[in-house]
Length: 314
Length: 252
Image (cartoon, rainbow over the protein chains, first blue to last red):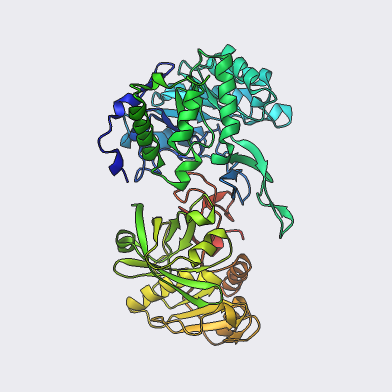
């Protein structure tokens, strides 16, 4: 599968985000790469710039009732419901297993709380573990104290989460912006003002599907988050807008990237790195095609490093 | 070890109305595949679909695997039309396997659910199990093959009695139980059938194993999309913990 990329110098793909040195700009999106060992046979963590593991909460979560996912045009909708093993097992079982196999990979934990207190505990535990390089904050979690409204839906509650986490860790913080916020740019600004080092734009787009034979919603949870190539223009727009407002803040593109073309679009919009998610499900070796094709594009254009690309369209 | 392999279609034969048997050349996957395992196929471009689709293995030879598929959507429709020599992007073998069962086993397949128990029954026959029974249930005779060559004689049942015994899988299973009793039951088929077989197995106190189908996104244990509800509470993943489950452990 990698033959056409044999003579490529991948060192031109080096990038850095808030002091995190990445060998390439590709990062696995949270929830699509498990706990970092599930895809060892196809695209192990060392081959990524960084990997973001499945969101972890304080207590284990069993997740939403099935069906939890379905396909839509050029994408899918999921309502996994943050099913995860909880921070205890995450740090005592999953991380040691990950580090035993992948000691040198850049590993980012994704934390998901339903209260500010839970976010604080998660930040503290992750910081203390010493095995994690950065933290992505999943601010699209339902806020229990506000009737389940997502923390990321308005600047104020997003800011509260980031401040709480910031107080408990010195690790680089990524805030994952929701495209469902009234103004994702205002939420992004609030996150940066509260201590986020890096922004991820964006999380899945809320959506649903109805089975017309049964006359019922397909997903057990009715609503889910849409991902896949169909959503990239919506995600790209938000990334572009955030970079225009906050050009100094390292930005990570996320949403429907499954080929070099869309990855390059996000970088030209101002992203220093990008996440690959749903595309892994379709082709667990898509990472190599994307990186290889980016290099071929750069060689063709005479670009020497990603600096020649990042933000050029903004 | 999960393997991604390009497989050439060796044959694609219509065996009943809208039912197809595909043999695909996959030497690496075939060498380690066992009954219960499944593969995922990247949808052919003409289907316009994005995510890989899981299919239980219906058997294997030295360098190929066999599938039984029914055209029920864009991906299966396009697979059913593929010609010999077409290449497919396949990952496997995935999932768990049926447990070793020393005593005689009754196997039941409903519709394309037959795939999983075809593989299990041929494998057991080659390992010397000679008291097994295999039932292939369908709604009407059109849905079932006229004659399907298999090492173990296949018994048939249809809801309307147009082929084999009259009645659905659970009704026929009850009839069989009037004159005999297996060491265990293994079944794969539509949700309603699985529920009925589970209840019958429990009523007669016979260990029952079910191969369950759930929509999958990753098929690799990473996304937790294919959740199967457990009677003890919580969920397990059909792709990694299954697809074969002890019927007592799952809520259907």
